[in-house]
Structure formats: structure tokens, C-alpha cells
Amino acid sequence: MKLCVALDLPTLEENLNLARALKSENIWLKVGLRSFIRDGEKILSELKQINSNFKIFLDLKLYDIPNTMADASESIANLGVDMFNIHASSGKRAMSMVVQRLSGIKNPPLVLAVSALTSFSEAEFYDIYGEKIEKKATKFAKDSYESGLNGVVCSVFESSSIKCATDKNFITLTPGIRPFGEDSNDQSRVASLEVAKKERSDFIVVGRPVYKSDDPLGKVKRILENLQKG
Ligand code: C5P
Image (cartoon, rainbow, N blue to C red; front, top):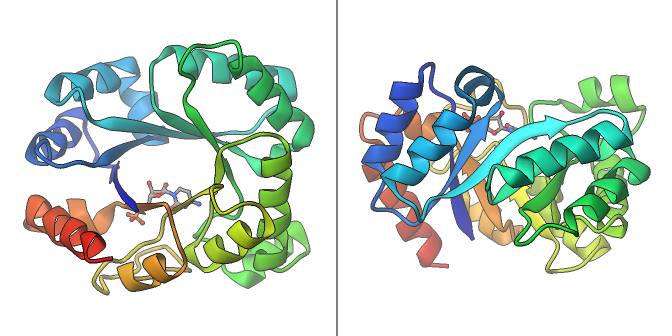
């Protein structure tokens, strides 16, 4: 299992300082909407300068018509990031078109589909999708798998059942992790490292429990030690 730290701090300099503090660690970094809208490509190049081995997940959650998504995906691939995501609810036609467009690119990034946002409660999710989270998330995962994507973003609670419904190598990336029982903040479906391991998550995303900690490097080391224990 890999650790992906969310760079969700208010300024470029704070995000880069966090990356500098963590530069000795074998981790992924997640650049999200806030940072990318504000800082653009600059944050990506600066992160690679801090440590060229940092793997970067660009979390922009694309959702648009198929052709626009394919165009945007090609532009993202040309940025040289290692992974990005799109919404599964954009549909199989859009997802397949993204996969097809990336097939012509050398070393394309991994593409994941967002199934259900981890901030949704059952009631909120039902209001929008008219189904229970687990059932719909599994359907979204099957659609993504059949469209040729590499995996999905989901809560840990769906990770194992998604692998059973698709393939054990189909990647699950799970945000909403509170490694050692930290505050859940605005997340509804949070889980600890133990649950993430049990549910066979491939990537855990951790934001506030790391960057709001007094000692982000110490927290990351503790998480990695725990993951290595298996
Ligand atoms: O601070 P916290 O650990 O809750 O951060 C989780 C990160 O994962 C945030 O950057 C959030 O945007 C992202 N994310 C999420 N749920 C998803 C997809 C991404 O929380 N389904």
C-alpha cells in the first residue's frame, strides 16, 4: 500500500515547504483543484525539483462531454504527472475515449475514476443518485474497469467489494483516512490504517492529519512504519 499526501495548504510556499519536509520519504503527493487552479504547472515543476522521485497524482476530477475530457486528459498526460482522475458518472463513452486518447502517448499516467465522494453520507448520495453508495460505487467501478481505466477512487468501505467485482489488480485509492483516529473534519466515511489494510486499499490519501500535525514528517514516518508492518 502506498501513501499519498494531499497538498491542500492555502499557498504555494506552504505546500512546497510541506514537500521539502517530506522529501526523504517514498510517498506520492496529491495536487488538487485549489493548488492547480492557483499555481498551475509551477507547482508540478517545483515539486519535481525538490525530489524528482516524488510521484504526483493530479486530482482534478474531470467531468465533461467525452471529447472535452479526452482533450483535457491528453493535456494532463503532457504535464508528466503519474496519475489523474475523472468522474465515473461521466459515463463509459467518455471514459473509453479518455483511455483511447492516452493509448497513443508514451508512458501515460494512470487514470482513476471517482466513484462516490467520501464526503457523502448515504442520505446525500441517495438524493443525487437514487441508490445506496455501495451498490452504485460498485457499478461505477465495473463501468470504469470495462472502459479500460486503471482503478477507482472510493472509500475504504467499498475497496474490497470493488476488487471482487472487477479484478484484484484494479487499483483502489481511498481518501478519508484518519490513520490514528484523528478528527474526521468534513469527511463522512473515514477509516483507520488497520481498516484500509484489511480492505486491500492500494493507495491511501491523507491530508489534514499530516499537514495539520505539529510534526508532519514524524506523522508520515509513523504511517509508513505501520504500513510496512503489513
Ligand atoms: O484532509 P483529508 O485527509 O480529508 O483530505 C482528503 C483529500 O482527498 C482532499 O484533498 C479531498 O479533495 C480528496 N478527496 C476526497 N474524496 C474523494 C476524492 C478526493 O476526500 N472521493
